[in-house]
Length: 101
Length: 277
Image (cartoon, rainbow over all chains, first blue to last red):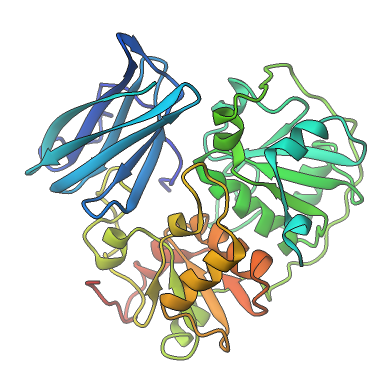
């Protein structure tokens, strides 16, 4: 049974995921030029409602499987918080960068 | 029950790391988080490998639970403080599970691993070993656990609280957005369920909202305080979080967690399903 737990975060898609069907939001958390691992990254929908949360990898990477629409990605870290908006028209990879601090 | 009976703050936890009769337990679906650093002295429980039957879809039985707690060095008289990632989903699930098997002295660390990390509190990678105990569990308290027929029978008669995200409730998504969306079960929700996402019960840092905020949240969503309640989600862990809010924080008396949740209900043949908000 697949779980609600946090899968490993990274830029490479898992082999069982079809990027032609999934709306994938890929991104990186940074502070200045430095990647921030261990940040709590929250995906909020167009109304600001919480949808999902993952922890960024050691390289600051995170990934969500969403649906077409407007999304806000908000990162929390002990060094500070930050957020960015991303628009996904359809399936495929959508990049988003979030700066904290 | 008062809030202090069921929740401890991160500050209290840090002051009581070595207190006698207190055992910290990290519960996660992804047990590797524990290995990268855990609260000093905490033992770990793996949500799947330790709490689920390895073959059937069900829990480990009473003897299995006794064996697990004995091996972890948890005694019947110990106060267990549970915490974990994912905003305490799996810790809340374990809390409900401990209550199910009759362990009364159990509390959640408010905010779980997230609050602990955001506060910059200490984590340790030291191996933790506790002396083995002889733990005795009770038979499952089924007043806390709903099965599929009760979920069907609750349509139009009890409060059904679907705590998944609005997009999962309406049938737009089949799973939370950090997971792939190809799933076996149909999409939608149990007819007459209200949708109160678990996240509305929590602040951004993972701590629970105040009792006044929680009471207003469920009342505004249409929860009838005079009726029994069944909470469900996809696999029963987010609904444990809401079960905790309703039964432990707000003290509503007849609240059950339907741990089969949508992965079971959405696969049943012949039951009614509703889509849309």
